[in-house]
Structure formats: C-alpha cells, structure tokens
Length: 72
Image 1 (tube, rainbow, N blue to C red):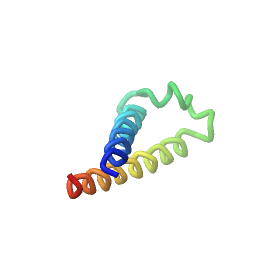
Image 2 (image 1 turned 90 degrees about the vertical axis):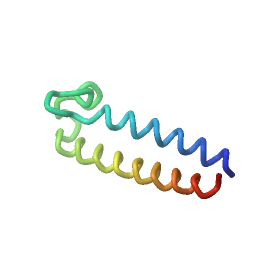
Image 3 (image 1 turned 60 degrees about the horizontal axis):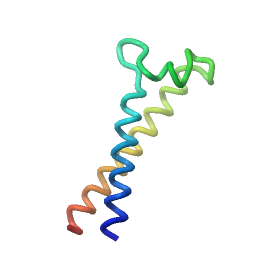
Image 4 (image 1 turned 60 degrees about the vertical axis):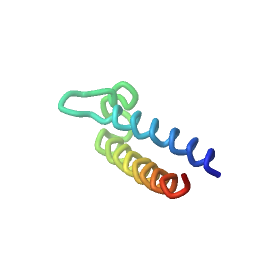
C-alpha cells in the first residue's frame, strides 16, 4: 500500500509541475504551444479547464502526501 501511494504521489507531483508550466503568465508561455492561440474553443475555455485540472491534481497531491505522512 505504501509503495502504491508513493507512486501516485510521484505521478501527481510531476503532473502538477507540468500543468503549472503550461499556464500562461505575462507572456504567452507554453500554453500557446499546445493550445494554440485560441483555435481550440477559445483561450478562456482552455485556460479555465487548465486551472481546474491543476487544482484537482494539486489537491490530490496534497491528500496523498498527508496519507503518506500517517502511513510511514
């Protein structure tokens, strides 16, 4: 069980890191590389879905990290 949680924690941590890099900051960022300049449903929709996915992965990472703290 511990090793499964460690694996899930690593995957979620890398996913959060990747999703944060995909966010657009002051300039275009990496999000335009994969999302285009609004050709896929508009940049607002893409950014909103990216925000939701980032928050979901971050909450999952937090929960798994807390679970690991109690197991180890």
